[in-house]
Length: 116
Length: 113
Image (tube, rainbow over all chains, first blue to last red; front, side):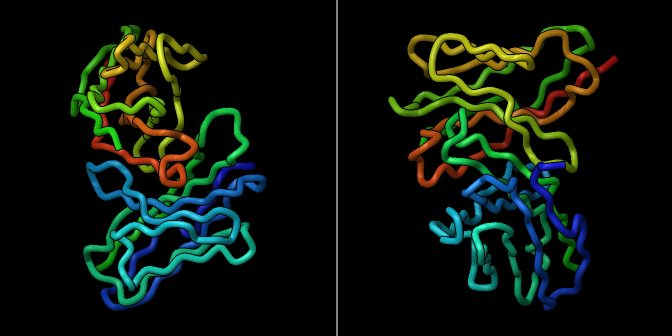
């Protein structure tokens, strides 16, 4: 399977704990995006990378959130001191600037976070 | 960024054609119209993209009138497996703030037997 993969698929944690999610994009894609989705809403943009450079962060991404893409391949999203409001589906997507269609993004299955 | 308006939900029956209309009155010259589909517990999936007139692929058709202030996603002969949320997005796919996608609430399509 050469699609976008995310790990873990589900994470249950207690308030105040730190969590880290991993995303492996499609190998030849140079752009990687993180989105967050709550029940009944569309995904909301969090941040994106072009290769290893983090080029934009949403205002939704508080200081407790940090994302990395150290070698321009996989990415991690860490949430420190989790709060109940962080409970959501965290989606990763990747795209190629040289794709046939303008920035068609390929999404992973998401990591569902539940903060108790 | 152009804001989009689409129905919250729609119901249909198997075998029918479904048309979902999206309004985007403030669409800019460089903006494209893109539709994504999302099944429960999965990430969204690209369906179709267009700039004007009509675009057709193996999954759907996209109709865009001359003024481009609205668009219609057409799904021919839907099946139960087409039950999903459909998102209409408008933006410049290359230069729009790094290509990030701005999703609205989407249209929840329910196909019944």
